[in-house]
Amino acid sequence: MPTRTITSTEAQNNFGQIIDAVVQEHTRYIIKRRNVPQAIMMSLSDFRQLLSDAEE
Image (spheres, rainbow, N blue to C red):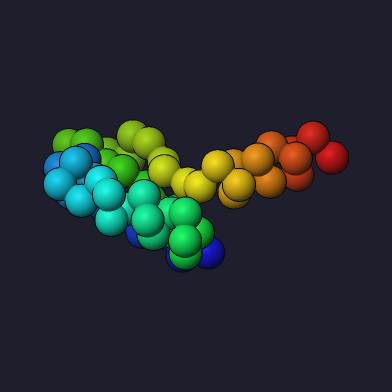
């Protein structure tokens, strides 16, 4: 699963393409605002797997 870092502006401008990459390619995005990592975007299936792994 690749992880990419993008700015919040890039996330806004390319939202549809980012969602496609997240769902189809399982790419994870770290979103930075003012050059500080603020959020992550990942597919729902990857998130559920992460939660499942954490519970074990």
